[in-house]
Image 1: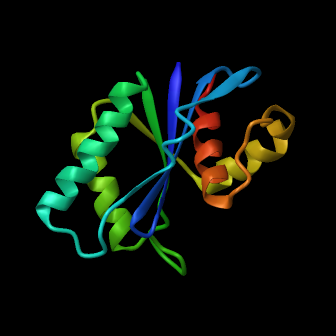
Image 2: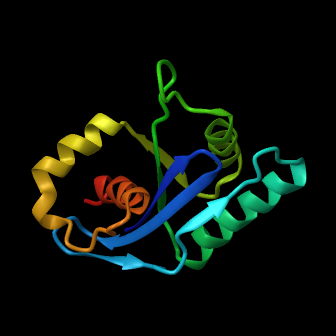
Length: 137
């Protein structure tokens, strides 16, 4: 199964695509790491954004997309950019979409740290990797 972890932050989406199982997995399409949307997008901008995401999904035979669950209240609650991208992807993506809560990622990181050998070093790509890893079998 091929899983894409999409970490939503501000007006950008960081992407890490994994294939395989938790015990033995590999990065797919390591050159594609980011899609973005202008801060005040027009309808055409959103259409281009969704087309980029769907092209990545199709060209890499992705079976599932995993997104970070946005905070709904409190400091750091999901802003307008992540809300817009999440809604557009829910409406127009060509594959199943799952959401993973940050607490689940922290618990999984403690439990399976030794299996995450190809985790990217940058923070946002690392979070996208963790999202994809969570849905590997």
